[in-house]
Length: 252
Image 1: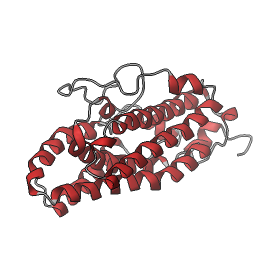
Image 2: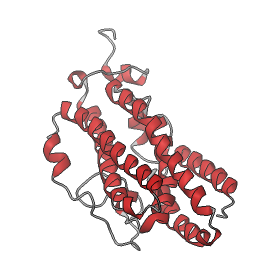
Image 3: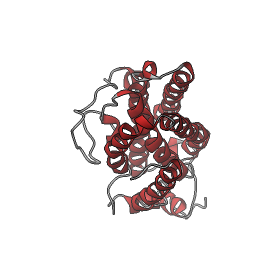
């Protein structure tokens, strides 16, 4: 980076930062917000799935659920360590919060943050039983994969590296969900419950992509922290889920 080029213009031209030392204040704030949202979502997601492990109909299903919980906690810890580089109190952060806390099942909080953490809104809703956990995992696992593909190219290199390492495991979580859903669909009597669960989770997962026409997007794009709009990511998710459900023979 030349002496004449500001950090802002460097980032706008695709430059990468490798440490907190030369990160502008606004950039640090947006990056911390992004990391907190990911960490809180992984910790809250792990807490929700942990409650469902023993609902699994067999050992294979319980192993899959346990793997998802373990790896989500690991992913949260990886990114939390990077937050520590920016001064976050990582020990207190992870241990002094009710990650299992949920709103009422029939609540509708849209895309709004709720409570004292930065988890995506979808992780505020309770999961009810094994079918519900599998269905939610298929929908949200696909969403996380799309969102991480976007974030794996961000301008803060240490975080981009972590997201690239995390992406294949989160993709596998979604695949485990699809495998579980196929097993459930083998029993035709489970189909109404699956369709009801899809109807419940689809709008809530869609809301996790954020508001259309977000006013913060342009600033995030200039910082190299986003490249595609919320609308574009949501459209990709809807198309991907639509194809998957059609393949599985589920009406929407």
